[in-house]
Image (cartoon, rainbow, N blue to C red; front, side, top):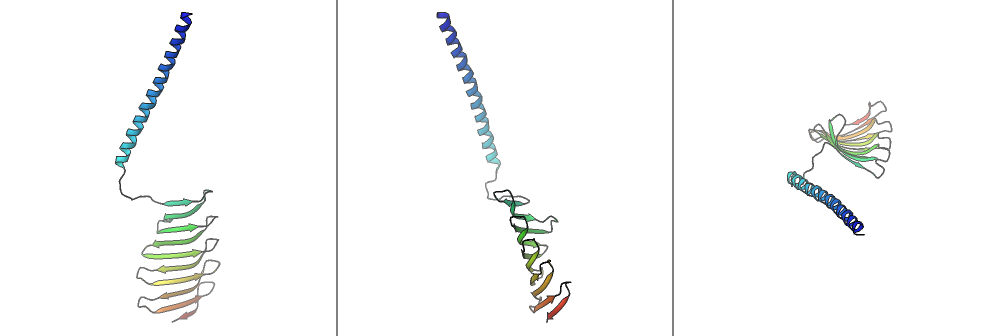
Length: 161
């Protein structure tokens, strides 16, 4: 009977030693993780600056609904809002030395565009369903207003002055 008690105590001691080894490894891993996080925390700048090439906002289904960044050609930096099917509907951006605002229809074609050119000359353009400019309103550098109506091929039909 004493030998059975001795073996039971021996098994309990071995089990306890095994548990102590597991807890020791867990404590060592936790300590290393805390040290790593503390070290990484020291390397992160404390300012509120976030740098990236492009920001993409997706909806719950994973569809891109907004983008902030350069266009595919890298000529335009813009904030682009897209509809459920991914067509751009509103674009606000800078291209070269011009600033622009474009409202598009559900197919992604521009319908209204506002632009300020490098010289500070503002313009407003209305587009037809094919995406061709049909009416333009603008100011010349000297401040003189102009209105132009265009045909389906883009040629002027009426202009003032």
